[in-house]
Length: 174
Image (tube, rainbow, N blue to C red):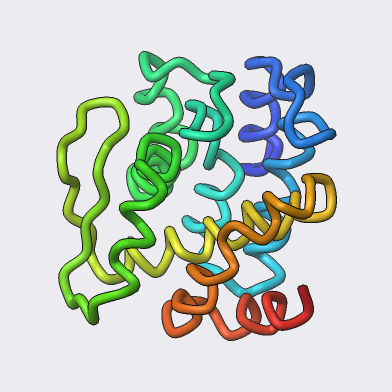
């Protein structure tokens, strides 16, 4: 099996196709996020992280498709870097990602919603999380109510310098 087939087999075994997510199923959403990241020219590890970005649940999507106890299996499947990005996306307080946008920081951090610990990020991790965050929003934007769609417009405006050029173009088109 190919790497993509291995990842999809794992996600299917976890029941991601049976979990509702933004008027679709979780697996469709995960594939959509991965596909957007691929279209935008993201690194392969970011695309893999996008495929797994909310399997541990998130602040807003509270269903857990993959138990944190399975992190070692996910790490073995997608690699440490991709899994660390997926884990960070899933477990962060989202506003702490956005907090990095507004004061000209050169050091980045998020706060875990599970432990409340501050987690430092490299500049690359921060940029990757920005791309995953935009892809997550963009993929489901037409399936959620308009008031939810507009909640992050300001944050995405300030995120532009950190996004891939094709992601900025997609944001302009939205």
